[in-house]
Every structure is written in C-alpha cells, then in structure tokens.
Image (cartoon, rainbow, N blue to C red; front, side, top):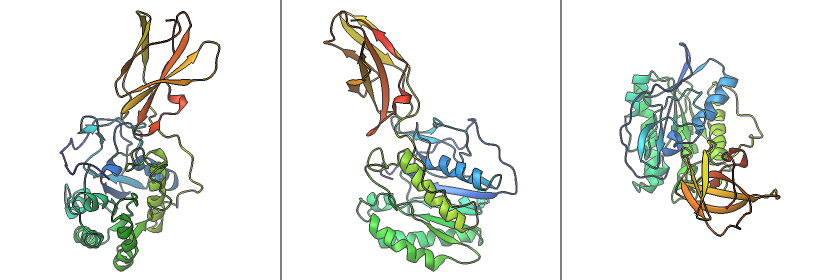
Length: 337
C-alpha cells in the first residue's frame, strides 16, 4: 500500500509468543506490502485470516515466511511485535513498500526456503503508485510471479489478491485484468485463484488513512482471501454477514494529571500505532463526555476551566482518522482547578 518504496531489513525471527504448529500441515506463505505486514497497534488481516483458518481447518495450516513483525510508522523501523493480540501464527514475507517488481526475496527462493504449498499474494499498488508501472505491466509481472513460484514447486497454489485502493490511478484497470490472468494460469495441478478483496472496500469506512486497512478493512481482506483459499480446498468460505468490529486503537493509555497555577496539566503513556490523542472532559454532575483537546503529543495543558469545579478527564488514542472506542479510554483522572 502507499508508502515510501524502501525495504529496510528487519530481524528475521522474534522471541515473541507464537502459536505452536506441528508438521504435515499446509504451509501458507503470505507475501505483500504495508497492508499485509501491518503496523504497530494493528490486529492485521493475517491475524483475522489465521483465526478463520484455525476455526475451519483446525491444525491444518502453518503460516510460513522469514518475518514475524509489524512496522512502526513513527520510527520507520521493523522488528516490532505490538499486535493487538499476538496469539496467532505471525510468520509472513511482507514488507512496507514491497511490489511485484520490487521483491525483498524472489518468490522462487521463498517457496523453496519455506517449502510453501500455497502462496497468498497481496501486491501491486506500489508498482502502480511508486514505480509508475502500467496495469498491463503489473499483470504481466504477476504472470511471471506465478511461473517463478512454480519453478520452485510445480504443485504450488497461488491466491492473487485484488488491489483494494480502487480510488488510486490504475487500480481499477489492474483489477479488471486479474480475472483473465487467473483464468489463464489456473490448472488442476497448481490452482490460481482470485481473492476479490476490493469488493465493497471503502476508502472512508475501511481505512484509517485513505490507504491502509483499519479493523473493518482487515476483516474484508481476510474474508476475500479465506474464500479464495476455500476454493483450493483449504478451510471454508468466510462466514457472512461479516462481523462488526471496533475501529481505532485497542490498547489504552495510562493517564496522570495535576493542577498547577489554576491549569490542568495532563500526561499519558503511548498506545502502539497511535499518531494522536483525544482528551475528553466530563463536568461533575453530568454524563456527557466532550472533546477538550486533541494533540499529537503525549501531554497537554488545559486552561480556562471554571475555578473550583471538579472535572473528570480521560484520553482516547487515535490512528489516522479513527478514534478508539470508549471502551479503550484511559483511566479517569478527577481534578478541581
């Protein structure tokens, strides 16, 4: 997805908690760009796909890949494991800014090194947006991608995901070419299936920054890929209607405050992935929370409050346009300026 076209090497493995997997399973290699690796404070669609497969194909799936991390947009570094819930198989081969024509590791080497049975590919928007490749060229590159994967494993199944950002130049044209690519390449020995991830995907509802999926968008992508995997015989189609999930950060902050010179001074801890914070105030004797401030910092001074009136304060983290739900509000601080 939209990002600087830079692939910075990160640690290949992490000691963070991982779901133990056994042998004899279908080895699924997930490769993609920023939308696939995700960033700090995300569930990621990989998490949601893993939970779906764990429920519909229990014990049958092993995600593989040389990475387990998410990307930190604030520091522009890899190696972070600040998932909302780390209890899933985190292995993947995704990198921020990755494209079909700009791999970190070629797909034949990945398939061979990871002994992959299935490749899930979510690439293409960076080729269009940053390499300025035409939709036709990207479609041809995807043909080469499948052929190269098959050179390492002639039986490998491949899921090709639509580009979800259909509002960006070239995306709709590329998606229009993909059914033909899939029909051309699909075979009984090596299935190639299209994941219709763009269907119903909204820039306003399903992203936090007009490009990267929020929790609602993650579910839609996971559902499309789950359906495609089911067509290869792995798991079942994703249940409909899709579940309603809360958007915005899900890791609360801890708030502290004090009164100084008649002003309220607040400070709080960080919430992974949050890029701003909303301060809410509720006056004593009322039930309504109102916005008192919004800042990209982790501290704020509130002025102009009524002397002697007790106020209650909480903080909600935000990521892009999405504010955390009220159940993720910080601890409450009550002060009398």
